[in-house]
Image (cartoon, rainbow, N blue to C red; front, side, top):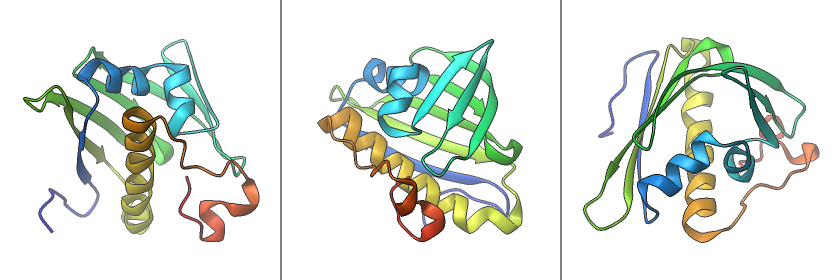
Length: 147
């Protein structure tokens, strides 16, 4: 595999047709996050209240915001997830996701989960498509890849 990793960290890269600003808006706004990441993800007091289709709730603090280049949040289990954006030279963006501090026993599931989230992001921002099923009966825990 050609991505960076160690036993508790995850790194994925994704090229997007959309601009840095468009991608940053998806990550940093309530409306954007709800289009690809969670059923709702409302920011209050520099933290995000995530609600997922299976009923899971997580409140993670916003660690850093540098529009339109960097967005960092505390994520499920206390890992720190950063989204770094750079111009791809043709009007699109390259996103690098790093999730640092993932528990070793959850690494494989989280690794796969980020692929699901990133593909949902690409579909939403580049093509205006929501890949998720929004039905708790067909959740990640039941073996479905829709996040």
